[in-house]
Length: 469
Image (cartoon, rainbow, N blue to C red; front, side, top):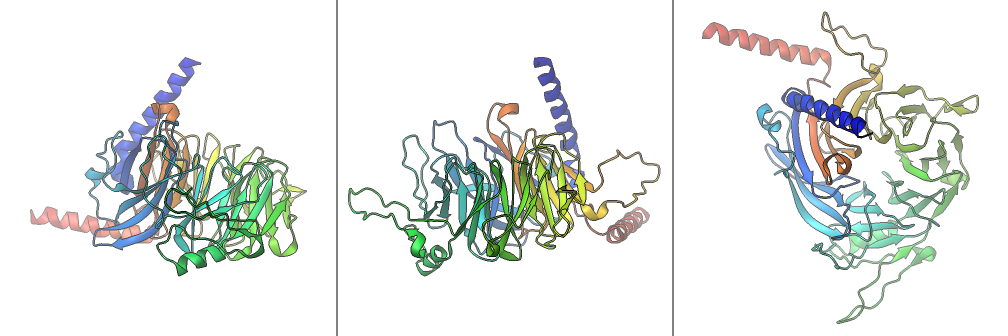
């Protein structure tokens, strides 16, 4: 067993060494940031500032500790270098054990329990939701929350709002609606739960800068706040109950996602290998239930923001399936229009690109983050006499900069083709994690004619230099 583990570590190290040697060729920019504690989630926040060569943007992370210090939700400031600015030799010269100068901690929130998932509200990305090992969803106004010093024995920060409704722990499945201030969650109670935080968001807008905001959610709102004075017990968080609860799964719900064009439609996946589509307007039972969408637990799901007919699922069977919601099943079981098989371990995260409708990313326990384009399936590639490995159909980029499972990643909607990804390196390096912010070189994804024309100009320039020397 030990020999097998050593062999695996060698192959990972070899792969990483090869990857690092190719960084100047494959990437326009890359920042590597060593984390003292693993982070199970990473998300972009609002863009703060645009400058000539780089932009400044919020980044949301977590610190999953061993109990010697509290678990935290971290708000960082990230400097995102603009395309075609970084020198090739600079982006490959980083120390794996060092922190990146491009990522600086701005604020720490002491989180009640581990942060398993972070999601930002699209209408106001200063509002984030978090999942921990409990039935509740916690809502935070990260700008208004006070900065805390995470030391053993420090009291937890107080969430701005608590969403109640699950009967058992809800650890991972979490989504925020792109069209309305709605929150969606799934959990071990096999249910999908929906909340509206409209009143809470309105209250925050009316009282900017207040970390003690309350919610007035109507009949199902419960404000548990107590008066706080000198020496009094700190104010407790307000809480609201569910707007709707949806039952149809037969095992833990692992991920949920809203339809990009409707707050009333959403989908969920779970350990029962089912993909379920829901419509809140037609009751609390499934609109469509897709049995055997995969051959194992389904860990993640995403709904295409450009084409609402396309839904991605990622599974413990190492594959990604793409479904067309107009024809989800055949002979009573899931019938994906494409299967993407480019991982050697369970898929943990899938996400469509905000920049091109046919492109998406997938990350897995094999330490790889793959970028796919489903429009490339079936295309014949002419490489001349070059011997190119036979890659899976649709795969056009492999990010191999992590040396252990890539637990989360997020495309940057403000900076095209820029991705933040995070790996839990506990097993391979004895603790901690690795955060990477990266953008592949644009010659890889731009239209072929454009790239060839640019290379032709470059060739002419080189020849012109030769003649003048």
